[in-house]
Image (cartoon, rainbow, N blue to C red; front, side):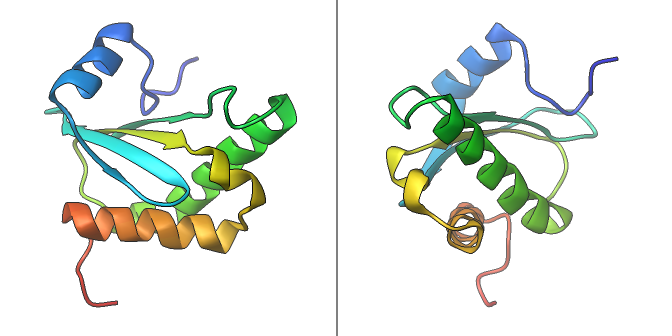
Length: 114
């Protein structure tokens, strides 16, 4: 059974790229758009520019763990796409978490003071 909180459809990705907002940091670029649903859907991408399959899978795991640490404070109803930059290969999980937290603060999802 497919998880309902995973972004899958090509049309959703195209809509996210065309109409969504983006914000970036040293390790991650995040695209987001309101989806008018009761839940937030997310996707984690790492292109071949990041490295071989081991490096890409590690990048996705780092982003998923960093998002897991922040997701309780985020509002529902958004499509969120995380794209790894090639600098993520040398990063630790805390660095990526700090990076994602900063992106969400800049986007207005999290309070500025923290």
